[in-house]
Length: 80
Picture 1 (cartoon, rainbow, N blue to C red):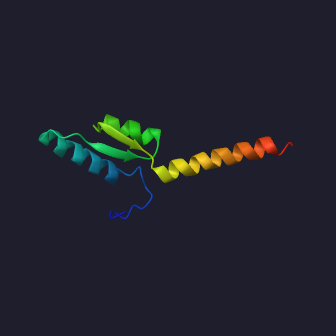
Picture 2 (picture 1 turned 60 degrees about the vertical axis):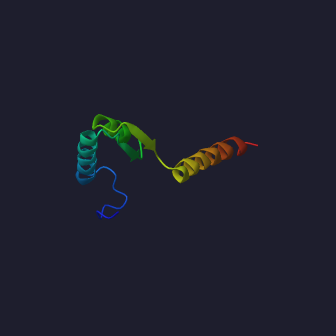
Picture 3 (picture 1 turned 180 degrees about the vertical axis):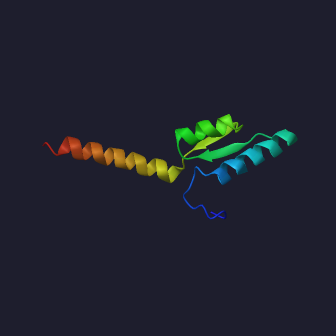
């Protein structure tokens, strides 16, 4: 958000930041972790050198689970 890219997760500036972080951490012998929002960004992060990935966040996972459950309930109970 401090870059002015609120909500933008696939921007060259963000990837450059990861690349710079990986380079600096490798020089110090430190692993890099990255927070990713989808499988595609996780794969790209791994390709760029991240060794640990956090995929999504609890509130997004919770919301997606509730949406899935709501959809199933509506579909299956509408016919009753």
